[in-house]
Image (cartoon, rainbow, N blue to C red; front, top):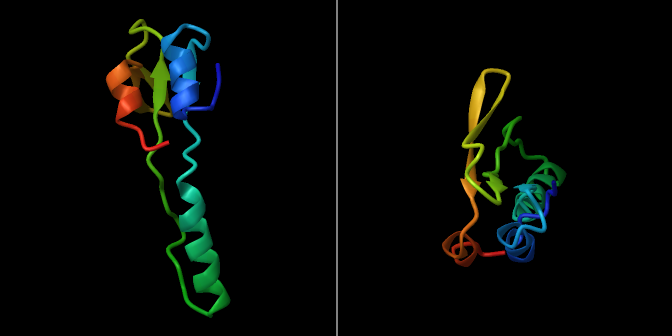
Length: 87
């Protein structure tokens, strides 16, 4: 299991080197910077901000994972999934 859902990490999942890959989205960094700058200027920000993240697997044996009553989909990695990612 890994949390490296970049193109390289997903390629390793597609090739079977990683069975499941959970995402820690690197695109959240610019949003955090914006929040910090707003606070430094005395502004206010929402108490909660969410960033889209996913769960990816080598095969389709698990289609979702339930955590505290919420189902989270698991996406089987394909070449198309990798090509559609910006990172």
